Image 1 (cartoon, helix red, strand yellow):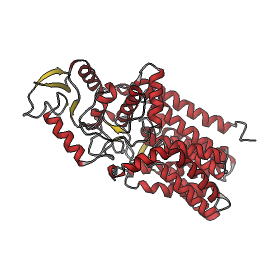
Image 2 (cartoon, helix red, strand yellow):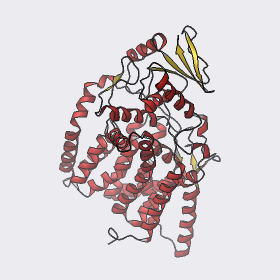
Image 3 (spheres, helix red, strand yellow):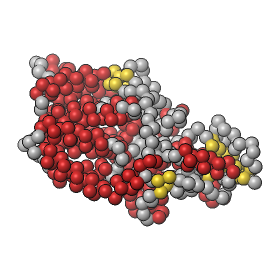
Image 4 (tube, helix red, strand yellow):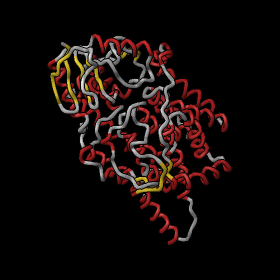
Length: 473
């Protein structure tokens, strides 16, 4: 009955998702780092009407293979087309809906596997982690794959082949590596449980890879371009979550219950990304929140004592919880060797205390409301000026490689730099650097740099304070 009729716990869960969505709409998170890369790709698809297989707008003159699965870029290009070329709208749709979608799909999946109480507590626990919010407010297909994993696990456990196939196919077309954890966990689950699951796994995975085959062959054909670049970062460890989750995990290992076993295997599979320490610690919150929520739903105490405990824990999760790490400055959401923007001091957290996502959104700084920040406004103005007044492409000189990509995202202008260095060769970099110094016609220079190298003959064409535009003489 509870699957078809909403209970008070369901209403509370949906209210949490609804409030998060409204606060996100009000906050309108700014464009940062990965946003520019994905907007740049989407703009190219919007302009040319097809998915490019070679990235010709970054690291010119050679460029590089474009290997990122294009599903999200196609959706964003469609939004641009439907809105008359409004790429800001395309970004805002993704940045606003990813986090509520993650919470909603997680709640619905846990509800079907462990009941309405566990679903409420698990969703509340997941929503207490502001580092997950920070990842979700950037355009990251990996986070969307993370959101689709709980319903994939739930549908697979119930042996719903069609839904599992559709979800896994979608995940494959979103990200190169993130679906691997889900696939590995489903294979391990099938081998342990048997009972027809192994046949189901090969059916679902083979059909999913069949739909993904065109892009898979493209990636395989350029596999030598992929690097094993990894970035650590400070892990985020919410103490209450893990204190509740560990006993529940131990109980699952003893009872070998299907839903718990699948989440343990998924947690183990996520260790594939051990090199991305900060992101791994956030991804692990999906299975950890499941176990912590199940533990809370099974607490056996007298009525008043239990009610008091639940109120205290709920208030703690809604406001702030004890945690180690996880501030925006220590989360791995920036390019390797690229410092975080100074304006990203969102909420100054006391030591060993992490504000919840709701609190973070409620006190979202006014200077970060809207998609252009004080740092990116000059880059935007400079890009538009170059588009109408100067020869192209652009050489960007500054600390933030993402701002080079921002030039392409804002205008479609190609640049001598770029992002996502997981697809790169030293020859491309050397050719790009040589061309930037000897052939570039226009330079966008951002502080602390003040001008192009001394041997580049150029004149100052536009001075925006922190950003200057130079044109070669």
